[in-house]
Image 1 (cartoon, helix red, strand yellow):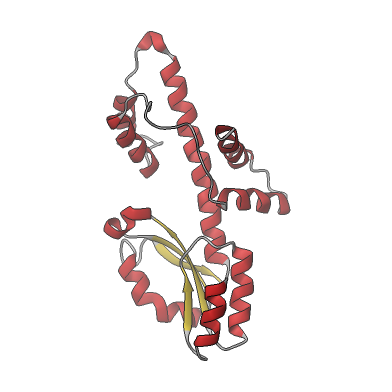
Image 2: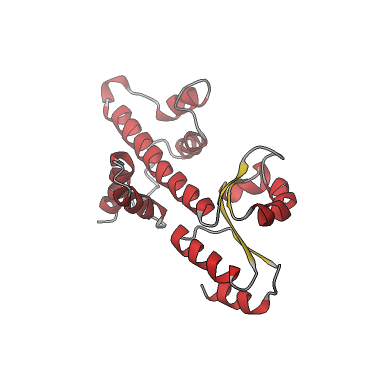
Length: 204
Protein backbone atom coordinates (compact mmCIF):
# COMPACT_ATOMS: atom_id res chain seq x y z
CA UNK A 1 0.00 0.00 0.00
CA UNK A 2 2.76 2.41 0.95
CA UNK A 3 4.69 1.62 -2.25
CA UNK A 4 1.64 2.24 -4.46
CA UNK A 5 0.95 5.52 -2.66
CA UNK A 6 4.57 6.60 -3.04
CA UNK A 7 4.60 5.74 -6.74
CA UNK A 8 1.41 7.71 -7.14
CA UNK A 9 3.24 10.78 -5.90
CA UNK A 10 6.34 10.19 -8.03
CA UNK A 11 4.76 9.18 -11.33
CA UNK A 12 3.14 11.46 -13.88
CA UNK A 13 0.06 11.24 -16.06
CA UNK A 14 0.46 8.47 -18.64
CA UNK A 15 2.88 6.42 -16.52
CA UNK A 16 2.18 2.77 -15.73
CA UNK A 17 2.32 0.86 -12.43
CA UNK A 18 2.35 -2.96 -12.42
CA UNK A 19 1.48 -5.11 -9.39
CA UNK A 20 2.74 -8.64 -10.01
CA UNK A 21 2.13 -9.88 -6.47
CA UNK A 22 -0.75 -11.70 -4.78
CA UNK A 23 -2.75 -8.66 -3.71
CA UNK A 24 -6.40 -8.90 -2.70
CA UNK A 25 -8.36 -8.04 -5.83
CA UNK A 26 -10.62 -5.62 -3.93
CA UNK A 27 -7.57 -3.61 -2.91
CA UNK A 28 -6.35 -3.76 -6.51
CA UNK A 29 -9.60 -2.24 -7.77
CA UNK A 30 -9.33 0.55 -5.21
CA UNK A 31 -5.68 1.24 -6.03
CA UNK A 32 -6.44 1.30 -9.74
CA UNK A 33 -9.14 3.90 -9.16
CA UNK A 34 -6.81 5.96 -6.95
CA UNK A 35 -4.08 6.02 -9.61
CA UNK A 36 -6.57 6.64 -12.41
CA UNK A 37 -7.56 9.91 -10.72
CA UNK A 38 -3.99 11.05 -11.38
CA UNK A 39 -3.96 9.74 -14.95
CA UNK A 40 -1.67 6.85 -14.02
CA UNK A 41 -2.38 3.43 -15.57
CA UNK A 42 -2.42 0.37 -13.31
CA UNK A 43 -2.09 -3.28 -14.34
CA UNK A 44 -2.48 -6.23 -11.99
CA UNK A 45 -0.69 -9.42 -13.00
CA UNK A 46 -1.52 -12.57 -11.08
CA UNK A 47 1.65 -14.61 -11.52
CA UNK A 48 2.16 -18.36 -11.13
CA UNK A 49 5.24 -20.49 -11.68
CA UNK A 50 7.37 -19.80 -8.64
CA UNK A 51 11.13 -20.07 -8.94
CA UNK A 52 10.69 -22.42 -11.92
CA UNK A 53 9.03 -19.67 -13.92
CA UNK A 54 12.41 -18.12 -14.64
CA UNK A 55 13.30 -21.20 -16.70
CA UNK A 56 9.90 -22.40 -17.94
CA UNK A 57 8.06 -19.10 -18.23
CA UNK A 58 5.40 -17.65 -15.95
CA UNK A 59 1.65 -18.09 -16.12
CA UNK A 60 0.19 -14.58 -15.96
CA UNK A 61 -3.40 -13.44 -15.50
CA UNK A 62 -3.55 -9.78 -16.46
CA UNK A 63 -6.07 -7.12 -15.42
CA UNK A 64 -6.19 -3.53 -16.65
CA UNK A 65 -7.25 -1.32 -19.52
CA UNK A 66 -6.68 -2.38 -23.12
CA UNK A 67 -4.24 0.51 -23.59
CA UNK A 68 -2.18 -0.29 -20.50
CA UNK A 69 -1.98 -4.01 -21.24
CA UNK A 70 -1.02 -3.33 -24.86
CA UNK A 71 1.93 -1.23 -23.73
CA UNK A 72 3.00 -4.01 -21.37
CA UNK A 73 2.54 -6.85 -23.88
CA UNK A 74 6.21 -7.07 -25.03
CA UNK A 75 7.31 -7.63 -21.43
CA UNK A 76 4.53 -10.15 -20.81
CA UNK A 77 5.50 -12.15 -23.91
CA UNK A 78 9.10 -12.21 -22.70
CA UNK A 79 8.11 -13.59 -19.30
CA UNK A 80 5.48 -16.08 -20.54
CA UNK A 81 6.16 -19.65 -21.75
CA UNK A 82 5.42 -18.40 -25.29
CA UNK A 83 4.16 -15.33 -27.11
CA UNK A 84 0.54 -16.46 -27.07
CA UNK A 85 0.42 -19.13 -24.37
CA UNK A 86 0.45 -19.02 -20.59
CA UNK A 87 -0.81 -15.46 -20.28
CA UNK A 88 -3.81 -13.37 -21.17
CA UNK A 89 -5.68 -10.12 -20.58
CA UNK A 90 -8.64 -11.38 -18.55
CA UNK A 91 -10.46 -8.12 -17.77
CA UNK A 92 -10.32 -4.75 -15.99
CA UNK A 93 -8.33 -3.82 -12.89
CA UNK A 94 -8.70 -6.45 -10.20
CA UNK A 95 -9.57 -9.29 -12.55
CA UNK A 96 -5.98 -10.51 -12.85
CA UNK A 97 -5.61 -10.86 -9.10
CA UNK A 98 -9.13 -12.32 -8.82
CA UNK A 99 -8.34 -15.09 -11.32
CA UNK A 100 -5.03 -15.79 -9.55
CA UNK A 101 -6.88 -15.98 -6.22
CA UNK A 102 -9.22 -18.67 -7.57
CA UNK A 103 -6.20 -20.42 -9.17
CA UNK A 104 -4.62 -20.70 -5.73
CA UNK A 105 -7.87 -21.96 -4.21
CA UNK A 106 -7.96 -24.71 -6.83
CA UNK A 107 -4.32 -25.49 -6.02
CA UNK A 108 -5.29 -26.01 -2.36
CA UNK A 109 -7.92 -28.54 -3.41
CA UNK A 110 -5.58 -30.42 -5.74
CA UNK A 111 -2.88 -30.66 -3.09
CA UNK A 112 -5.39 -31.95 -0.54
CA UNK A 113 -6.66 -34.59 -2.99
CA UNK A 114 -3.12 -35.82 -3.68
CA UNK A 115 -2.39 -35.94 0.06
CA UNK A 116 -5.51 -37.97 0.77
CA UNK A 117 -4.88 -40.35 -2.13
CA UNK A 118 -1.30 -41.09 -1.16
CA UNK A 119 -2.35 -41.53 2.47
CA UNK A 120 -4.81 -44.23 1.38
CA UNK A 121 -2.13 -45.94 -0.71
CA UNK A 122 0.32 -45.87 2.19
CA UNK A 123 -2.24 -47.30 4.61
CA UNK A 124 -2.79 -50.41 2.42
CA UNK A 125 0.22 -52.13 3.98
CA UNK A 126 -0.59 -55.61 2.65
CA UNK A 127 0.30 -54.48 -0.89
CA UNK A 128 3.59 -52.83 0.08
CA UNK A 129 2.99 -50.06 -2.43
CA UNK A 130 5.90 -47.89 -3.54
CA UNK A 131 4.51 -44.36 -3.45
CA UNK A 132 7.30 -42.90 -5.53
CA UNK A 133 6.83 -45.55 -8.21
CA UNK A 134 3.11 -44.83 -8.34
CA UNK A 135 3.66 -41.09 -8.56
CA UNK A 136 5.99 -41.66 -11.51
CA UNK A 137 3.43 -43.89 -13.24
CA UNK A 138 0.74 -41.24 -12.79
CA UNK A 139 2.96 -38.48 -14.16
CA UNK A 140 2.71 -39.81 -17.71
CA UNK A 141 -0.59 -40.40 -19.50
CA UNK A 142 -2.72 -40.31 -16.36
CA UNK A 143 -5.69 -37.95 -16.03
CA UNK A 144 -4.31 -36.83 -12.65
CA UNK A 145 -0.90 -35.82 -14.03
CA UNK A 146 0.13 -32.25 -13.20
CA UNK A 147 3.06 -30.11 -12.15
CA UNK A 148 1.95 -30.56 -8.54
CA UNK A 149 2.25 -34.32 -9.05
CA UNK A 150 5.72 -33.78 -10.54
CA UNK A 151 6.72 -31.98 -7.34
CA UNK A 152 5.18 -34.77 -5.27
CA UNK A 153 7.19 -37.37 -7.18
CA UNK A 154 10.38 -35.39 -6.62
CA UNK A 155 9.68 -35.22 -2.89
CA UNK A 156 8.96 -38.96 -2.69
CA UNK A 157 12.17 -39.74 -4.58
CA UNK A 158 14.19 -38.03 -1.87
CA UNK A 159 12.12 -39.19 1.10
CA UNK A 160 9.88 -42.19 0.38
CA UNK A 161 7.65 -41.78 3.43
CA UNK A 162 8.08 -37.99 3.68
CA UNK A 163 9.34 -38.44 7.23
CA UNK A 164 11.60 -35.40 6.89
CA UNK A 165 8.67 -33.12 6.03
CA UNK A 166 6.73 -31.60 8.89
CA UNK A 167 2.96 -31.97 8.72
CA UNK A 168 2.53 -28.21 9.01
CA UNK A 169 0.93 -26.40 6.09
CA UNK A 170 0.73 -22.58 6.11
CA UNK A 171 -1.55 -20.54 3.90
CA UNK A 172 -0.79 -17.24 2.22
CA UNK A 173 -4.33 -15.87 2.17
CA UNK A 174 -5.59 -16.56 -1.34
CA UNK A 175 -7.41 -19.74 -0.30
CA UNK A 176 -9.24 -17.82 2.42
CA UNK A 177 -10.16 -15.06 -0.01
CA UNK A 178 -11.49 -17.65 -2.45
CA UNK A 179 -13.72 -19.17 0.23
CA UNK A 180 -14.96 -15.73 1.31
CA UNK A 181 -15.76 -14.92 -2.32
CA UNK A 182 -17.62 -18.21 -2.76
CA UNK A 183 -19.73 -17.34 0.28
CA UNK A 184 -20.45 -13.84 -1.05
CA UNK A 185 -21.47 -15.30 -4.43
CA UNK A 186 -23.51 -18.18 -2.93
CA UNK A 187 -21.28 -20.68 -4.73
CA UNK A 188 -20.74 -24.00 -2.93
CA UNK A 189 -17.01 -24.69 -2.77
CA UNK A 190 -16.66 -27.63 -0.36
CA UNK A 191 -13.37 -28.96 -1.75
CA UNK A 192 -11.49 -25.66 -1.52
CA UNK A 193 -13.04 -24.92 1.88
CA UNK A 194 -12.11 -28.33 3.27
CA UNK A 195 -8.58 -28.02 1.89
CA UNK A 196 -8.21 -24.67 3.67
CA UNK A 197 -9.51 -26.12 6.93
CA UNK A 198 -7.15 -29.09 6.58
CA UNK A 199 -4.30 -26.60 6.59
CA UNK A 200 -5.67 -25.10 9.80
CA UNK A 201 -5.81 -28.56 11.39
CA UNK A 202 -2.18 -29.21 10.42
CA UNK A 203 -1.12 -26.24 12.52
CA UNK A 204 -2.92 -27.24 15.72
